[in-house]
Amino acid sequence: MSRTSLALLSFFVAAPLAAQAVQVPDQNFDACTSIMVSRGASVDGSVMITYSADAAFMPKLIHHQGGKHQAGELVDLIAWENDQVRGQYRQVAETYSVVGLMNERQVALGETTTGGRRELRNPDGLLDYDGLMWLTLQRAGTAREAIEVIDALCTEYGYGSGGETIAVADANEAWVLEIIGKGPGVKGALWVAARVPEGYISASANMSRIGAFPMDDPENWLFAKDVVDFAVDKGFYDPDGGRPFSWREAYHPNPSASSKRACATRIWSVLRRAAPSMNLSSDFHRGVEAAEPYPLFVKVDEKLSARDVMGLMRDHYEGTAYDMTKGLAAGPFGSPLRARGLQFSLDGESYSWERPISTQQAGFVMLAQCRSWLPDPVGGVYWFTPDDPYTSCFTPLYCGMTRLPRAYTTGEYGKFSWDSAWWVFNLVSNLTYDRWSRVLPDVLAAQTDNEERYMAMMPAIDRAAAELMKQDEALARRFLTDWSVGTAEQLFEDWHELASAILSKHVDGYLREGQRSRGVGYSEDWLRRVVGEQGQQLALPKPKSSAGGQR
Image 1 (cartoon, rainbow, N blue to C red):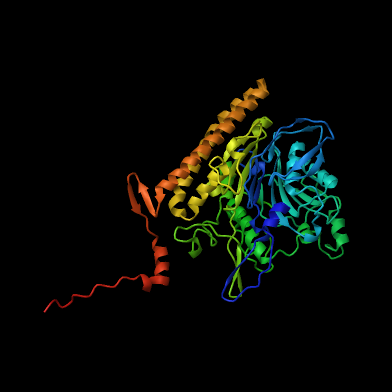
Image 2 (image 1 turned 45 degrees about the horizontal axis):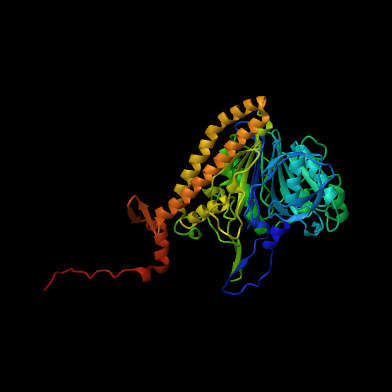
């Protein structure tokens, strides 16, 4: 999240009052989740990364038309998160086209905010994380080149965000890059990047993941040349202390119990679902003292499809002790919705709701799928959904497309619009939250029908587009554009109809079936809870006994 977004979630301290609940703002806990999947961990050999952009904002799909430029011309730097002009940068001679956060060379980026040492923030840095990502995608042809570009841009313009984990992918490799600034007025950035081993995945969720790392393995590990010396100079690391240098301990020390709860639980859930045989302990994310952080990489038990990875992003810890669809807080219909903030205090005790991967505050969620066996404009697919992925639907956008579906590029956060995809998807989500068990089956049916249909159609689209690329690249791009835009626009119309159907089917506490309506009532478990609290008030008088007959 950028400085602008973090300002919306700024932390304040409120003195707890006896017998009152006090909400505590969430710092970075409302921020993002990302997964990185290596080629060897995917069913079809594609590299995949995900990114759930979680904040109070309405995203719009963005597009940069690449091409030749006058080298050195000054261009406005516009942040994709809020459309604000941050400053100007020097244009390069040639840029790549970009759809969302994936370019035409199948390079894709995602991020999660990790915070880190606040004294290393540089408020004068021109590049917040979003501007840095946007420029990098226009300039980098591979994942490794993206890492070089990130370093060069920070050196030239200054890095203005706090600590970030940036997921980097191309058709061959997935990388985890962690970055932080050097402090007020100092350009450049400190960073370390790890290549996800083949057959493995990684995940990031607002806390640093990289500890000690090898410094003699450039095939798999890259880092800023001063990453250790800077820490020594600042007193963050003692080279004579008998311990190897750890990125996490130097630049992201002492995560709080609340941070572990809100962040590490998400990491644990991704890894435990991808590799259940590891039987990962819950100790670290529950704040057990001296518990070991989760491994940066895990080898998957079974290779993952794109829909499997979408499923990992649709997670409320179902089936675990932390299942958010269970218990009193889930209400009568088992809803995973927890109103913000996550933390609260009551009678002098501190508490925290669970923070799921799939969340109502998601602005958008993407899955970038990079496929090396196809031409780049065909191989790269940017699966995109506005809003909460559990109650929304991914649409496939080929990275070689040249225009965007209009509904996904319009709207504003403060005003509902039937013409905005974000608002229509958000409406369906909000119609579902409070009546989860009743409405969700309708939403999942629509979601599954569309996503599985896209998956079934795309091999034929791939073959046709790849063949066209041999004959006429411009025609192939138009074909991909027409299919991607048409598919997204039809999905938008389908979600219009779904919203209308939910409103008319689930109305006033009734379920309409054809021309008839029936009450749906509550589950036995919920009724027992109600009777336990209000039974005396709700109980009906028992009829008087007629034992003994009449006289």
